[in-house]
Image (cartoon, rainbow, N blue to C red):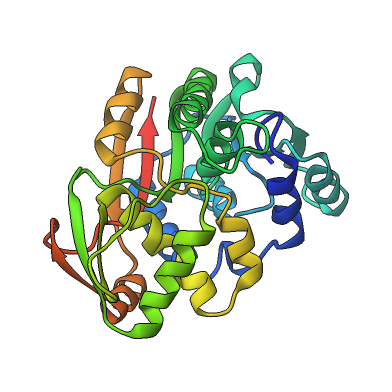
Length: 302
């Protein structure tokens, strides 16, 4: 979708199981509110375009263009099929569709006022981080791909332009967390996730039938994924078990974006509905005072 040489099985599942709730529902509403708040009052450079990377997965690019007064929108995806479908259905002359790799944006000559990555960078991380058909995602490879894409976008932006990101986030704390499952069926679900999720070892150590320990960085991974099979959404789980959604901490976004010449505004939190579900299914016993934050929204100004 957004990078060259993606593993074919991952792409096949993504195409076969594209879900209507990708940008709707709790997470969609939450990230829309966060981005709108961070963008409030910011006008994009005159006569500039919004480049929406991972086109077809979000209406947030349109919101950024409207709030910032952009002249046009360029929807970008590496998947030629998505671009062809989008281009054929497009009726707005101010919208252009392009096939491109997220890491090649620096070579463009367009005047660009915003580059948006709405829940897309974790896919780049997962696609590029997985070598061949190896089920595990290598953090160094994936993180390097994300940084390459962000650096390219920063170079493309006109002065006063913005880089906009939404995604899941790694916790700042590097601690071991003790967790209790509040019902037997939740403990059974955790054991299922532990066995089926091969993209990153969860490093769970069971203390008894309902209690376990794991690193904070994989606790948030478990919390991100467990509710898909919990509600019987097997199509979505078949895709998400091939993806790692957390690749940077808030502090890492801050330091990297500043090094790229951008000034970031960052909001991190958890949708209230997600937090309520976690508290109904788990109890944090040790290591953290509460559940880790789930979501990050970034608006970084050049």
